[in-house]
Image (cartoon, rainbow, N blue to C red; front, side, top):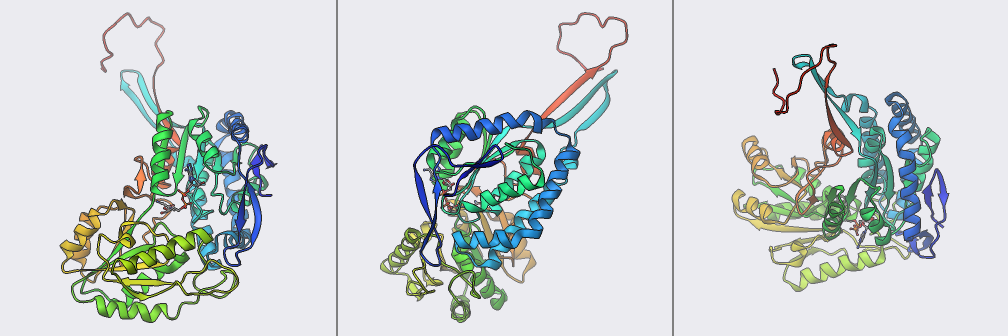
Length: 492
Ligand code: NAD
């Protein structure tokens, strides 16, 4: 049984609800994860709340020492963690390792927390009155994460929250819950006090308990747009600050002057990497002018070389996460054909062996904006080519899309790229870079239906999300009395 982690140790929970965890490459059920009852959630929250006062008062020197220790342990043992990711998610090992490394970068950023939360001080703002500001932790916080990055996405948040003095309850995806437990053990080994990092396994019951508990002060959520909207609305209605990152439909605009080999490499890497189960995956390729045929030919050549199979072996692409999700993606491909798109590469017949949840690279041409393969987030290895005549037409298409997570332009023209970066409505923009995931010291987040709330993940926005600003105005009076004055204080 894959358990919770409460009060610094594994906890079986009280309920009898569980969910199967599968190895997507074999189809075998490899374990069952506990699904929290409301009582389990209450115990997890109570533990995080009890640990908060002492952790908040632990000096920055001691807190950062724990973070440095965690970073060292993680760096030394990241292969173990990557294997856990591959076994439950299916992505290839090199990709899993990349995910761990990007998470580790946030730990490294959070090690600088003393500098990041330094306050300000103004002497003699008014005569003999000094003003200072400090950033303080907000309290116990919740992190609710999706299946597709079981390590990196939680690590966008919890290193910064813990460094800032908050305590954290992580509710991982029930599809790949083991990585969170491994991280909890690593925190304990690094010297983190019990209760500062808690793992609550579960589903909507656990999420709702976190969203409504008065003890949880902030919620960082990442997942699909309908659930992100629900989490944002419910959490804020209960007085919490919430950042809820949702789904995506990322476009890559290829201008006629682009290096088509570079663009084809990028489309294949960003369209099919991690079997398209990335919120920054490219799913719509917008070809401007007359380049579509040549570009498609180059993409087809490349897809023919991709090996699909068990992510622990020497392959390029693993399976999809569950059988249901694989069938849902296949149904989108069926719908694309029925709605008149040209199926250039059909991944439905791919077979990576065993009973795995296989669906190979799939390419559609002549996709139009009304087709469901364009309007919906498929979250699988399906790339749609849309043909437009002009830059303006392509930009309008991208900006009309309800999502605005990442986008990329491919061109050799600096002026065109500059115009695109200025005009496109998306939170993250790549110029000849297909997956423009910001570094840990910048902030990750989309616009429009890709993010509810106004704070992006990690970087300075993350630090601000997990801390509250306090401004202190101080006067140490001379022995004489200041005198009565009921007017609003004017500075002099
Ligand atoms: P999901 O929305 O199904 O689940 C996300 C989390 O919400 C999980 O922890 C899940 O247990 C919980 N949840 C699911 N249904 C719920 C409900 N009805 N009530 C309360 N909680 C519920 O998402 P997923 O399938 O795990 O992940 C894929 C999605 O996440 C895609 O849409 C992808 O684009 C998105 N995503 C976005 C980003 C981003 O940065 N914007 C990053 C990664 C993934």
